Length: 364
Image 1 (tube, rainbow, N blue to C red):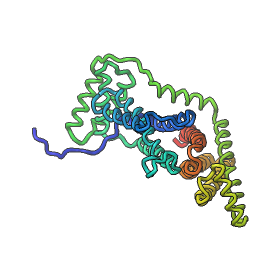
Image 2: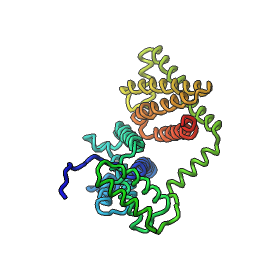
Image 3: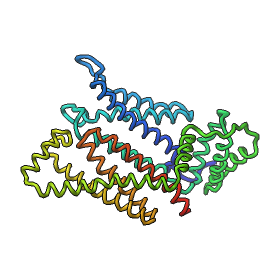
Image 4: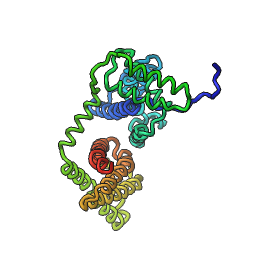
């Protein structure tokens, strides 16, 4: 039978795509942090001799190659998980040496290298947030995912929860506009629903068990104490307002000679890479003040009982800090900003959890 319709090439998001991306994201961040920490503690050793130097960017490229080949060669589900892990590790090892790639002197410690790495990480975070959005189920996409999920049946590894997911996907696919798509979905649905298939008891994976454990601990904390923790975090973040305003007023009042002297002291203490970078220091102070004011606004709104608006303000303060202040901090302070970034990401997760557990339940 000849086809009368053109080929459909619209992209389809893979099942568990957000999970794979999260694994890659965590591996990327972990590889950069562990590599920098290891090198700092060991005095930056090198593998090679007076002529050769085997940089860890090469190991990263090797891991990236393996990560690319695995899903091309293997159809097993675990190949995607391993590929996600190796891609994050490889990308982290590779980009850690970006300073050598963007300077003629092959300067590993080139100041802009740290913010370049952090900006790349932020782009991956934005990609993750985009991928994890749940859109309206589309029949063709659901049939794609159902067909991919059948490998569990082939491996005699299908459990009751996975069967329910397959049936739900096929039910959506049965509503496809194209008869052949709807027919295939209906046939598969009937087979899975009516055939005596060997099923395993539903058992959540490690990641699902981990997130469920976090949910239990978080809800055990209670709504009031959870909110108090966020208020404390916003108060600590808001202290940057007073410091920023005080520094701005001081720099505006002191003579030029005293201002240059202070900048020289900051450079000597490692706060600035050179006296000429004072502009970026002032920019960070301004952003810190803006973040602090937003954090104080969040505290005020939460104190007035306006939780929805307060959490929005807290989220805005953290996003401004993570995308602006911390980015500049990586340029000015190199990788000493890692601790600050990790703590603020932790507070961000705290705010997102509060919104998901309590505010969405009320609005829903």
